[in-house]
Image 1 (cartoon, rainbow, N blue to C red):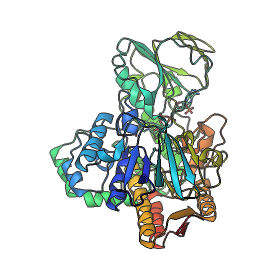
Image 2: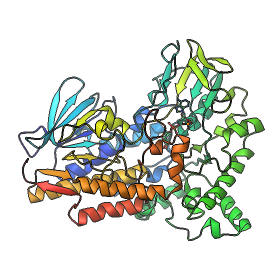
Image 3: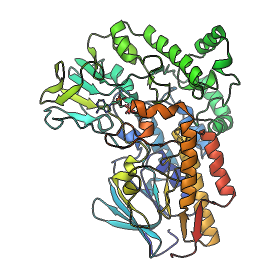
Length: 542
Ligand code: NAP
């Protein structure tokens, strides 16, 4: 039951991925009526949309999950170190089933607009079927990497075969024996290529910027490993809560690459080459903070990549040049046989940055400055408009009448990624200027902050919370200051989505707080403990 008979729900949430499920749990626990709308036909968010062959988590599954129920953590068993998309999707159904979440979820319902109603201090939400619903709190759980980027190539509509974004893989697509072209070589292609190359007649990857590629080193779950995980979940959760990227890694190993003698450093790099992003965080503490250390790590990775690529000409294209850009200025992919896939006779690589740019898409394939390639299927693995894209795609109108898209035209400011000035009673899970971290960890921390804020409003009789402009300016200035001191600041030179630099005709900007997820979670807690100084509270609409 909602607490106010003049509105349909206390909270309307958009998106039924991890964030939507977490919000159902926390808000329902606080006694709110919650409705989650999702345009997809199933829950899962990322794990419903990204069904391309090979899709799987890059975080290890045992901490890429929701932690609000110790019972669920004990009950669920992951089959592998990195579960495939369908296993994660099954896990999300398990959570929804076990926690009786389905009555809160309405699928096949696309929210098109949400408009703040100044007179009543409520939100009016409109869906694509023309229906409307009102709520006190409007919350985005749409995910920070969910709005696909479609490149603007001439002739894109003229291709006669299937042509689609990687996050829109057509159900039941037969690709066995087909000639496939993939535009883009980021984390998605790195997962997809080795799998589709096994069945396709040929796969041709069109690469622009080379990536630092780290090995995933998949492992099956064993009973001993599972027992160890389940016996130590409190410690695992605490590790995630304190880690700079929200991962269950050691927060500090107490040594810097730059201070370590070369032979010892090499040995530490080598001994820890066991897969996952662990290597970046559990070898030395300064790989992302110190340019010299970052270069040492980059060199090690490039050499490791070269060892696995048979053809030196292919290696030249696939590996970044040392010093070209810092490790992590672009998010490095994790690979499961991507580099080896280029040794197959049916896999080709086209360097569209330095050798033959794409000119157009034709009826039968892709034409570059040098060649005409014929394909049966073209996949656009061209990434996402991160952090802001899904929010800007809706008409979200705040108190002044300005939309979020208008507000974020030149910069994308927020308060800690959870709320935005001029948008009262609206919250975002992992909005712009939140950290980039293991997402379930950040999602739960955000959901707890939002719930604590609403609990305070309920207990103190407030109807409206308004994010303060000065708090937004202050947070954004801090985020920009921290960003300017990191190596990730060079991401705009290499089209990094982490700075929105992958979007054509769009000014790169600071989208991520790089002060450390653990530090950020502390700041959220401090905000709760000090009564949410970033917000003003009113008992009735002004
Ligand atoms: P991405 O990393 O942004 O890569 C997009 C690729 O498309 C890049 O190679 C880019 O080249 C290329 N591209 C973009 N526009 C192009 C154009 N007009 N012409 C030619 N090439 C173009 O996208 P993604 O691979 O989908 O991955 C995005 C993020 O999603 C990842 O970084 C990761 O955070 C997340 N993700 C996670 C997982 C996981 O955890 N399991 C899996 C997949 C993705 P440039 O580099 O030159 O711009």
